[in-house]
Structures are given as structure tokens and as C-alpha cells.
Length: 114
Image (cartoon, rainbow, N blue to C red; front, side):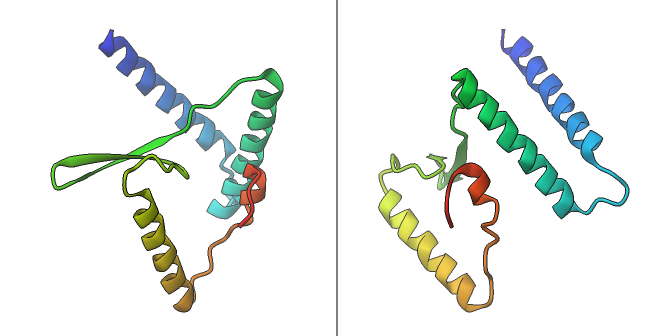
């Protein structure tokens, strides 16, 4: 059963890679490609909303000192979530002091504000 699932996962990744490559044009910069992909993502999400489909949230894992920590976007389930977000806010502030200003133009596509 696991092998079948792994095979399906590989096939899905190959399919996604082919789709991504089908968008690329010789004159296209990565930024233009990115914007076109986000437009398609927005359309897909609207179709999913219309159909009543719900996307499962994505998770990230990190291992620190042999302990695995699992995170979800904007999640607060982690026991140290408050501290983690405070550190991230501090780091973002430091980055801005040194001239970094995040591009939040695509947040509107996700229904968020920056």
C-alpha cells in the first residue's frame, strides 16, 4: 500500500513539474512566471470554494536536538508558538532596519493583508 502511495506521489510531482515547465517561455523571467502561476492558484482556489472543496493546510517539520517540531502556517498549536512568533517578529524588524522590505503584493491573492 505504501509503495502505491509513493508511486502516486512521484507521478504527481512529475505531473506538476511538467505543468510548471509548460508555463515557461524563453523570454519569461522568474518573477513573471511566478505571477502567472499565482493567477492560476487564485483561479483554482475560487473554483475550490465554489465547489465546497477544502484544502488541507500544509505542514513543516524541523528536527532540533533529536526532537521533531511540526508547524502549520499561522498555527498556534506549538507549545512555544508565542515565543516563536515574537522571535520571528524581531527578526523581521531587524531585516527591515537593514533595508529588507518583503514583497507582500501577492497576499491579496490569498485574501490577506501585509
